Image (tube, protein in one colour):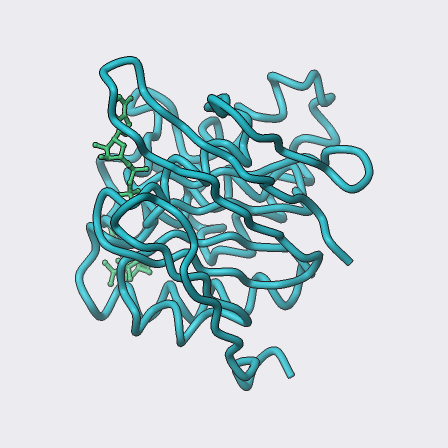
Length: 220
Ligand code: ADP
Ligand code: ADP
């Protein structure tokens, strides 16, 4: 079953840069899809379009059914430094008017999922890079989104932390049954994490190949 399709989507920025040129991309329910390709090939632009953060210049974004709640994880954790871990994860719930009792349950659940239950009262500056990224993932998961979009989330982390978070992510995606679209320029990471990989070419910003990956052991 398809969740959403980008149909012949192009994007030209006001300064004339062509980021995408007639990109076709289906996202299937339940898959872990990686978008790979060289820097500047339009991966982030395609992801931001799925999130509704960027409008296509032409083409269309077709949702098969109603648009689900979407979680978005950026390359930088983008946490509020003045707010505790708990309050950072609370933000999306507050914006949607979720009541305090329900919110507490959801925040506790999200922090437990990323292994940070003991750090609810900590502040971002007290956490390691990997822990900050996990807070950012908890903040994305707290709305229990059927679709999780991640834009090179682990690019700034050291290799060991990255490996740990990759394993956490495989477990989370399997537990939650969340569809994930993951942007990376690491071929290793895409093969390790994904059920499907779409390769994009540098010019003119369109998909050129598709690779099916055997499901990682933890998901089978
Ligand atoms: P990737 O994620 O694959 O590195 P991006 O989607 O970030 O690629 O960018 C694709 C192209 O669009 C690049 O050439 C980039 O410089 C350009 N670009 C991205 N955002 C903007 C913007 N807001 N204004 C102008 N050019 C942009
Ligand atoms: P990560 O793999 O998330 O980057 P680290 O390897 O930096 O985590 O830290 C491993 C463990 O050490 C963490 O799970 C946490 O329990 C503890 N830890 C790390 N930084 C701090 C800190 N600033 N204060 C207290 N405990 C910490």
